[in-house]
Image 1 (tube, helix red, strand yellow):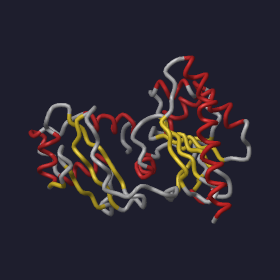
Image 2 (cartoon, one colour; image 1 turned 180 degrees about the horizontal axis):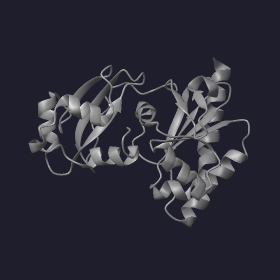
Image 3 (tube, one colour; image 1 turned 135 degrees about the vertical axis):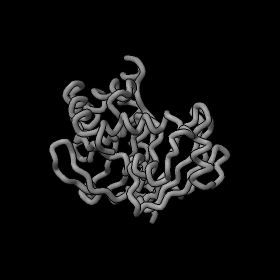
Image 4 (cartoon, helix red, strand yellow; image 1 turned 45 degrees about the horizontal axis):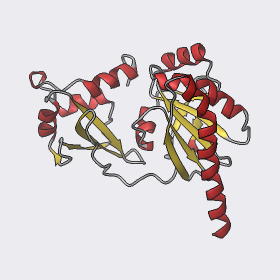
Length: 245
């Protein structure tokens, strides 16, 4: 999402109803949401039923309604659902991901990386954004967690634009490799809450996801031990399953 701060535009789209007098066309809506013509889009109303764009637009005009995006793992299609914040989400129309979705992105240093670059080691992805307070509080615990595990890949992923992500890294001392402008990839991993971590095996299989974050110093002190128990448990279970295959 370019032309203005990507994160700000995305949040505006999620929290601002589509107002009838705007006469917003589907083509204009797709452009504002950053979907190229090659991506097939379906729309759902508040009752999770597939509807036309006009019906979806009418639902979006209701108070407190925002757009909830689901993407297929391959990025070829997406479903956008009208949803009232705080209400139960509609089930994703796509099957759960089982492997890391393919991607080709650039890190903050401008170096291109792909999902294939992460193969060969277990990988922990951390999904965050710059104004997420629980994300901020867990920065240092995550720095220490990664530093103690050189045998793994660690990657911090955000939908923030490069400049915003760079300012965050500089201010809070993030020492993970950081990939900005990754909204499309984040949607394909099905991340809906922040911060979230996702653990992948060395061959790219998804072992599990966990919503994290710390709201105060006590929770920050528990980030490392809780993450260690969760991650080590998944890795042990996967190794045991692999031994029986």
